[in-house]
Amino acid sequence: MIDTQLARHRVAETNVARPVVSVVAPVYNEAPTLPLFCERVIAALEPLGEPFELVLVNDGSRDGSLDVMVELHERDPRIKVVNFSRNFGHQVAITAGIDYARGDAVAVIDSDLQDPPEVIPELLAKWREGYGIVFAQRAEREGETWFKKATAAFFYRLIRRITNVNIPVDTGDFRLMDRKVVDTLKRMREHHRFMRGLSVWVGFKQTGVEYRRAPRHAGETKYPLSKMIRFALDGITSFSYLPLQLATYFGFLIAAISMLALLAVIVLRLSNGFGLADAQGAFYGQASTLVSVLFLGGIQLIFLGIMGEYLGRIYDEVKRRPLYIVSDVLGLDEQPERTT
Image (cartoon, rainbow, N blue to C red; front, side):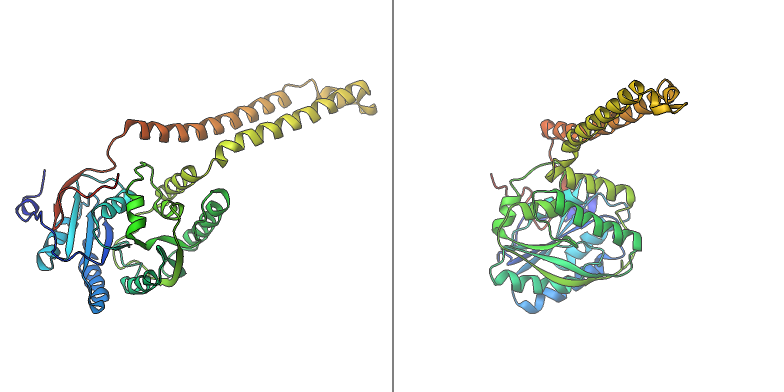
């Protein structure tokens, strides 16, 4: 049911001046952080003296974040709100923000204040130099465990090696994109989205700006280990066929090992085990056969699971359901402009 306060303050008009920059921020249970986040974004952009907007996408928050966003919009109309009907996920929330953003440049940043809004003017400066995409690259990561740092470093380097896109290491979704890039991304409607990969895949001139990532201002991470694994799978399966190709590689490897083992058994039997008393008995037992069958069965199940992951993604695309459903908006058109 649509929040009555949100319905009462629905705004279907846009600012007269088209924003030069739009800042897109997905929000999920960030009520304690939102006022300071918006304050810092505005403080970072106001000195530039150019029109801007801040698009907050409420991804089904359950902690009162929507009420905070409505209040922030009433105080400052430059703060826009896109309210989902339910939780659709972080990457889809970024997509919705990009769909609704009207700026000549669009910056994507999380609302938990780990990524400092003060870096956005540096990204804009690089954009004015002619770069289509300016990504923020983490030089330091404070407040994170060694496990998360190690797995993140491994993931970025792994995906760079096995995919057909050159994704910069140690980067997240914090980046700024030119309107040409945004319009291209709006045409890409795949469901299992890996936005940092898609933004690189489209091409255009790209560069990076280093920054220090801060600890969370409040709350807890929205990416526990299970979501990190799922996110990693989305990234790998979106841009690499290597998991499927591994089935072929393992097939040839196991076939080669089997041929060598068969030749060894034939030689040992014909030579009577080279005089070893227990050699012949070793080839008549059931243990070696059982282990071999279980090993091959396990390999087959693993690759059936990998094929199932790819088939499941194909099934989701074939259904052609919308990426998200918007319950209401504040300060924006009811329907975003779509690039066909």
